[in-house]
Image (cartoon, rainbow, N blue to C red):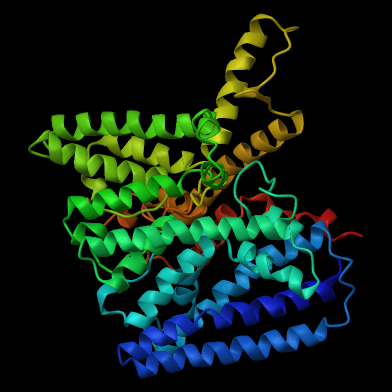
Length: 484
């Protein structure tokens, strides 16, 4: 591996991340939070000094020697140092005195997980609240993808980093040039973000809260400026707007690109979006009937209102709440946990396994039943008109097995710390699928503050694993990776 070029790019990346805190400084100054503004200033200083030193160390590296291994290293370590640097404002300001807690909160932000250790969000200074939500927005479309958009100007190709970070199965770009694809992705992201901010402000939500909740929605992150999340507003109109944009965020962004090109027929013929929307419809119907029949809500309107919002929030792995679903009947909670594991579409900002993989796994399982009857029968796995290549099938099945193993052994590790079974397993699920809230002691109205530091670090690692979809991170634990 060309370590010098990795260090050089990570140095540039540190400088880039440190400069993104400038917006938070402006909000801090606007609200008269001068000490908080200073904590961001110290963070920029640390980032700039560290970044420049790293850049100078690798300045003579061969920029042509940047391949798959280097791309993996930059993406994995880039996300890690982002969380380390991003934790500094919380720590320097004294609002989160434990650095492990600050790191957990920031990793949760960048990976769009939405898990928090904060017990009272509303007392946090505005500058930190903005930074907390802004990390969502940066991580949602991908901090590396944004970096790639400007990277070619520095003479370094970014195609390997793009492929390592963009979530989902298919990694092809919209255009032959990765830089152009990155720019288009972020342009779509910006347009949707602007539309949601304006829509929320139309509903009398403040500009500050509109920005923060837009960051959490489009990134499917879920950090709110209110302790009661979206439930604070008790507004069907606000819930409806956020619900629509959560659904948008869970859709493959390539389909938005096709929409802007006028290829509507191709969008609606996409098999994944049909299954994605179908799951939302069916599960919403089942949960609505369940919570209404169990007397959780007195009328069918409220049952539907809270069910559809929670289904969309969980399906897209956003994690916003309008109700404490941990108090819902067992069937409803089981369905929501199932949705956590499925997640949004491939190529969306949503987390979890992705609908595409679930479709493939279901088709492979069914095909095996038919092959058991007729062993010599050759069955091709198709998604729409496309045949899924054998290599992709192996990757998807391997991904599924690894996912299950991490959930099982991760749950065992957390439970070994004296945590109850439901909380243990759903904490690993909630962080691995990047959703945040789970069941038990980490339910919709709870937080992660009670976990010991070792568990918080492990769950932070799960967040990174989930956001970068396992292989990008786990490859560093394989000895062959380090061989020439």
